[in-house]
Length: 356
Image (cartoon, rainbow, N blue to C red; front, top):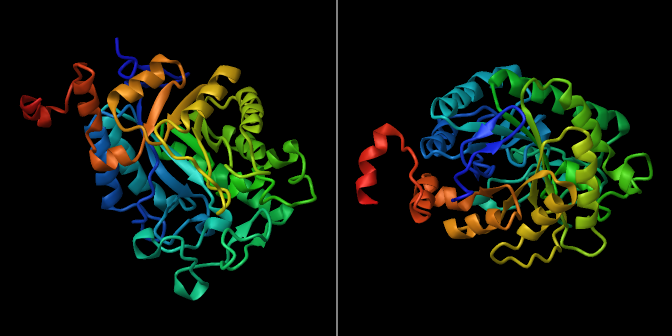
């Protein structure tokens, strides 16, 4: 029996299958507001029967955007367009999550199809970035301003307020983006965090920012599942390690975080990532095994039998796929066919089954 097409039970929600659409930035928002592009982009995955669709990194403050085209949820006026997306996804029987984020020092860049990783100054759709320290991601970038303790508390409250708006919009999952070198991850990594106050130095201090966000966000959630996406390793000497990720997961479990969404890398430009099939799966496996938390595996998962094997080996509880869904928004249909699993199609698309 296929595990990929077995439901995944959360405390308050059930994924109808274990194929999750990974959050993928579209850089197509207008001043943080969702557009019809987002409705069609996310809606097509629901028509295609994904178990959960995770919305792209959504900034909690304007200066927390990666680019000027990023989604935001710092304003109540941004709720209606997002609620429209949420309602459509629910109408197709899928769950939807939102990834709340702050890009920190990796903010204020150009859209990738214009000039990837190009830092934009304030007079060119950019802004002054902030970070855990004044170290820039690239040496040529304008240095970020190190956050004061007051700034840190303001951002924590921004996460809480955005989470409240996400609840109002009807999301099933709220995920905190603590991976890929963005602000929360910047606090984790000794390669970036050179602070000497209670937010720097020891492991306990470096995770404090995230734990304070978790505490505040928990206060406004109703029946939402709280997830955290982490980079389990920096892939760089002296950086954040898998050992620390396991320690963090134990603590997050005690804080009622339900799922660890496991990725890697992104903290520093000199990282050395050995990309190959399933290269991130061992990290999800280790966290799952040592903490007994629900974990997701992500990265170069390209075909059904590969995804099924990850679950059969109990290396993760679900798979998150990004590029595969961009190539084929109805990837779930194809994976089901490959595994000889009968699933319901959207009735409007039933005639397409004739070609299978």
